[in-house]
Image (cartoon, rainbow, N blue to C red; front, side):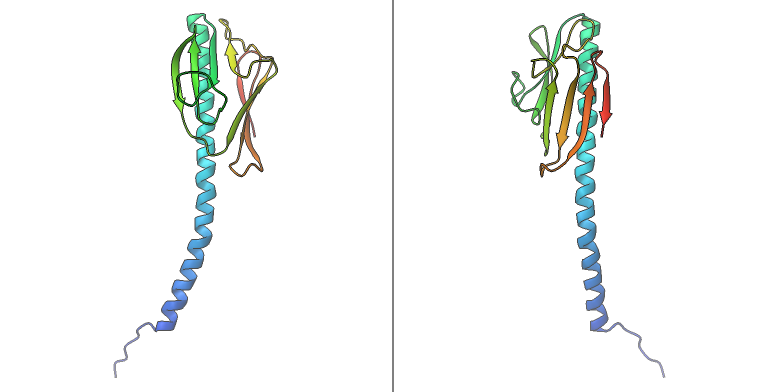
Length: 155
């Protein structure tokens, strides 16, 4: 006799339950992986912006300012929306991104912006960009800019 070895309804339901539980745990993992990738992308963009601003100051022998902007026209207060590079009071480049977390800058001097003089030297003694996760619980990374305008990552 030939017997058909099919799958029962109960084994199908158990397999679907197991698969749905695995997908639930995997989705949480993928969400954190995605937010980590966005954070690192923002970090790379910001390092590029800082290096570009310093490079402009050195090559054009001019004062260059990196400041926060929302509309891309003038300096504003929120670093999380985008950045603007200004040379000789003219906007040179706008970087628009919407950071999910909070990006802040604190310099040792009085300026809330990052300013390089004609020699590529930072006006503030040291400055620090800090990126806080969207929940506001944890600082994910810091970028420290020294007096010479060099950037280092502090995680």
